[in-house]
Image 1 (tube, rainbow, N blue to C red):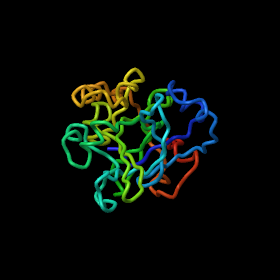
Image 2 (image 1 turned 90 degrees about the vertical axis):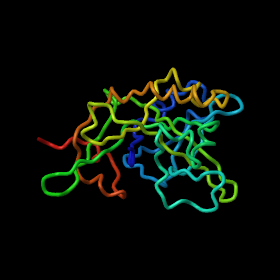
Image 3 (image 1 turned 135 degrees about the vertical axis):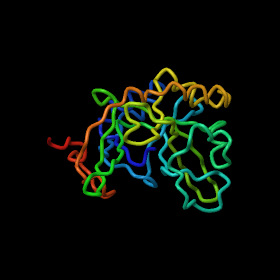
Length: 222
């Protein structure tokens, strides 16, 4: 799964992933974030009238038909069933998005009964995009998104049996294009960069969702 992630690289490094964004979006002054948690507002890239468009909304999907914000976890959606589940079905058809990040966290149980976090990222900490879905609920006036997950790649399945889907750049335009049919979109999710992920243990500071700062991604000393 993916319940915490980071976006701490420079904004220029992040938006370089998206060649179709308007130039006006590339000069933002965006602070580094080391502990992004569900229900916080996050950036995501979707299809716009003139190519890619940058949006900011709640990381916890609120379907367009919902009468209230769900108490059930909606920050992740299983890729195997999202196209058929009522909560995600309409978004999967035409509101697919890309969620920029540079790493995420998972936890393992320690001998003392506590939870040890690990920082998971691509080699050399490259920026990347989670495959996501978005929705706008006009009744609640909430723009929101969720991250799609799949079975974990063998090299990280000891950390968790699920992992977020990280799309290659060549799939970006097709993934967010509403003209891409559901079957074709589902096929794009099979090309997941999860097999490239590496990880290392970090301090338990990240266990608190109030913690922030570069110290959260520093490796634990042997």
